[in-house]
Amino acid sequence: MITRMKTLPHNLFRAIQVRELDRLAIEDYDIPGEILMERAGTAAFNALVAHWPEARCITILCGIGNNAGDGFVVARLAAEAGLQVVVLQLGDVSRLNGDALQAQQRLEEVSLESVPFSIGGLFDCDVIVDAMLGTGLDRPVEGDFSQAIDAINCSGLDVLALDLPSGLQADTGQVLGRAVRAQLTITFIGVKQGMLTAAGPDCCGDIKFDDLGIPQQLFTHCEANVSRIDYASLKYYFDVRERASHKGQFGHVLVIGGDHGMLGAVSMAALAAARSGSGLVSIATRADHAAMISAAQPEIMAHAVEDEADLKKLLTKASVVAIGPGLGGSDWSLRMLALALDFSGPLVVDADALNLLSQEPEKKENWVLTPHPAEAARLLGIQTLDVQQDRFTMVRRIQQRYGGVCVLKGVGTLISDESGEILLCNEGNPGMASAGMGDVLTGVIAALLAQHFEPLVAAQLGVCLHARAGDLAAAEGERGLMATDLLWPIRQLVNP
Image (spheres, helix red, strand yellow):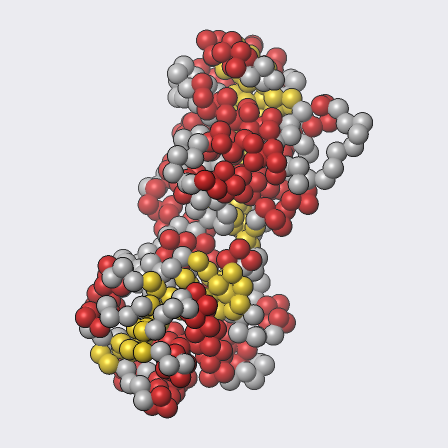
């Protein structure tokens, strides 16, 4: 059964795991490889017809592996359906073997044959099908494959990628030199984890999935260590409050930040905490900010804090501390952070607090760290590019070095705790790449901690709530989306 991106399976796999599932299906459950290939090609052809019903001419680029075999099946089925089909062959055709070779030979049944790749052969068609490289790629794309990918991306034509866009690393979402940018990708047996983070979403476009009918028992032999999460699967946590509830039951969030000239970040974090259901929300900030905050938002208790004694009093009343939004890097910032790190309750650490933490690393088990890629790089002492090349490894490293729960923000936000399992949220949109979005997330997670959710639950629920709110807020367009636009959807979502 084919499923769309919004209803993708929750288990995500590495390429080697999917290959093992394929092997087990063939060897232990006696499903011939040619049958699996036929199912993949049929699912892909059906997806093509459903997505581009007006297409009359398709060009299919095939390599020399099983991914090419899927492409040959698509070509045969398309020709049988009366479409005009061109099959362009890349790589040494003499290396075709097994099921892929058999699929190529069956092109004779519809009077088709593959022809050597040429750039000119790409343009006279309605849809391009990418069946070149699949999941086995582990080095930068070279030669004709490189030229073909560039030509595809410059053609302006719609692209269907089979299993994985060529040039995309299946496990990390890294582009290996260059990668096809498809409008639709249909992937088989298991969804590859790299499709949903880093460059994966931009390369894959919309994603469909087909398990090729392999027995579900197979998955007991291959445990996924990455799971996809979304708001729909977690909203049951927001149960109805009892009529006799009082604000003290839902925690007191203290947001620390807002050094001189950075009033907005701490205010947005506090407002997000309030809209997410915290019973009480306070801000510890510079004296020249406190009165302005109180005047603008009287529900938020803003306190002038200039020395350690002022903050110590507030910490005794807080159940959760969020520190970092607008914190800065001054002596005042360092003193505020030092006191916050001595707080015995749960913490959310973000923004400037993460940058300061990277200078003097510390490990705690009751905090949630929420770095974006540049902050993650500082925490690990590496470059931002290094983080983006393997986000799964980096979120684990941060968690192992600093403890607690790590939320690595960005497309396909990742969450990791001491168990080693990684959770991936594939909701959200590019409009959320704007100032203040991280401050809102900080406030949301802090409010959930204040409402007695365990750190891992608060992190995953907060990330999905934040992302879903962003999608709702972007209903009228992604450009121009502001962080405060999420506050009303957040309130709606915590009351499903």
